[in-house]
Length: 502
Image (cartoon, rainbow, N blue to C red; front, side, top):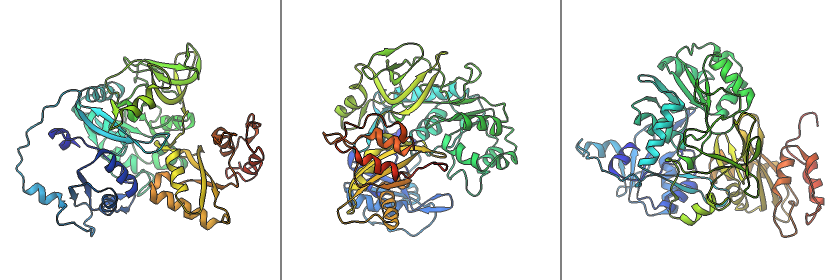
C-alpha cells in the first residue's frame, strides 16, 4: 500500500477471505492491471489459498498483466511464466532508489469496495490530501496519541479501519503501529491480551464482535494477563451493546481505561462521531458527540430536520476532508446513493437517536445492508447468490440479532416446483453462498418458505420478514395490503429463531 502511494499508483485492497468471484468483480470494475498476492495466507492456523483464488478470479475477469507473489508459507502454487513473478526475485532486480511521485491533493489515493443495498459493491474513492489530513487528525485526537506509545488496531487491512487506523493515520503521525495476522481466539482466547503484554500496547482498538466472542469464554483468559500497559480502549465497526461495553471497560481495562466508541464508514474515510478521552463523559453504547467540524443532522422520513431529543435517519450536513469523492467509474451512482434521499445532505444509511444531552446513539442500518461482525453485507448480494442456485426460485435475506456477530444472516428461500426442502439442501446452500461471496456472507439460518409476503405490486415486505426473523412476530403491523396474507402464518410457524421458552 505504501509503495503504491509512493509511486502514485491507486491501490484497491481486497480482504483475503473473499471468494474468486468477489475478487473478479472488483478486478473488472476498476480494470486492475497488476495484482499483488501471496502463495497462501494464514488465519487461525488454517491456510487460505490466496494465489489459487487470484488465478481463478483472473480466469473469470481477464485484463491482468502481472501478478506479484509474496512467498509466505512456501506452499505449492502454479506460476504462469509470462504473467507471474515472485516478489523476492523481482525485488532483487531493482535498485533501492525510488523517487517520490508528487501528487495533487485531489488525486486518487485508493479505491476500497463496500457493499451496497443493491447489486454490485461500490468502489469508494479516496483522495491524497483530504483523506490523509483527516485520518491523521482523527488518529491523533480520538486516541490521544502521544509520542513513543504503542498503538494497536486489530482490524484487517482489507477493510477501511485497517487503511485509516493501522496504516495511514498512525504512520502520518509518526506513531508505532502494531500489525496482527490472525484471529482473537487462536491459539487460545488470551491471544489479544498476550500480544498486549508482549509488546506493551498502550492503545487498543477492536470490534464489538471480537469483544462479545471473548466475553463468552469468561474473565479468566483476560485476568491471567497483566494488560498494565493499556491506557485507552476503542471500539469500531458497529454499535457496541452496553453489556459488552461494561465488560470491556471493567475486565479488559480494569475500570481505568476510557473507551472511545467510534462511528464512521468506509465512505467517510475516518471517524465522525466519537468521545474524546478525558474530555467527553462516556455513556455505554453511545458514540457520544461529533468530531470537530462534523455536522450531524437527524431527519425524519420526509427529510425534516429534527431538533433536540429525536430519533430518525442520520445525515451529515456539511462536507469534511475525509469524505469519499465518487463511486469509481460511476459518479451518478455516488450522487444517487448518498445525496438523492435528502437534498444537499450526505445520507449515511444509518438510523440514529439523540438523547437529552445531545449524545448520539447509532441504531443500525435503515437500508437493506446488514452488519455482520462489523462487515457490511448487502442483502441483495446474498439474495442474488442464493437465487443463482438451481434449486432456488426466490430468496429474501434480512438481519437478525446475533449474540456474537451483532447481526446474523437470515435467509428465506422459496424452492423450485418439485424440490423438497432437506437438511442436505440447507447445508448445500450455505456452502454455495460461502463459495460464491466468501465465508462472511454464509447464512446463519435458512427458512424454506412456500411463499414470501408481497404487496400486490410484487414488492417483498422486508419489514415483516425482519420481525419474524427477530422472533417479534406479535408486532407485524398491517398485513392486509399483502397479496396473500396467509403466507405470514406459515412463516411464523416455521421461524428458525424461536426463543427457548417460546
